[in-house]
Image (cartoon, rainbow, N blue to C red; front, side):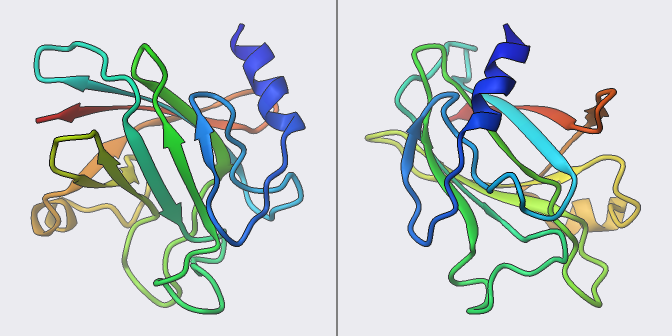
Length: 167
C-alpha cells in the first residue's frame, strides 16, 4: 500500500507561489524536477492520551537543497504546504531533503506549525539525527527542535516519521 501511495505522490506536481491545502496523503510539495534528494515524511497528530486528532491544520516550510527559502528571503518560502490530517490524524508529503543555510552551522530542518480549532498553535522545527551539524548544544538552545531519523530505500528516497502531540 505504501508503494501505491508513493506512486500517487510521484504523479502529483504542485509548484506554486501560494500554498494549497491538501488532505492527508495528497501532497507533493515540490515538482519532480526540484534539485535535491527525495524525502517523504509521514506524520501523525495525537493528543496526550494517544488519540488521533483529525482535521488538524499542518503548515510547513523549508529551504531548497542549497539552503535558500526563496529569492525573497525566509518570510516568503518557496517550498511550503498547508495540510490537513485525516481521520487517523495522519499527514504525509513528498519533498526534498532541505539544505543547511549557506555559510552557517544550522542543521537542515523543516518548520512546522500545527493548529486545531480551539487550541493554541504549536511550532516545531524538525531536524535530522544523521545531520553532522546537529549538536547537543544546538538542541539545548532550540527547545522546539524535534530530531527524527531517516532511512533510505534502494532507489535513493529518504523516509522519516514524526508524531506531534497536541496539548
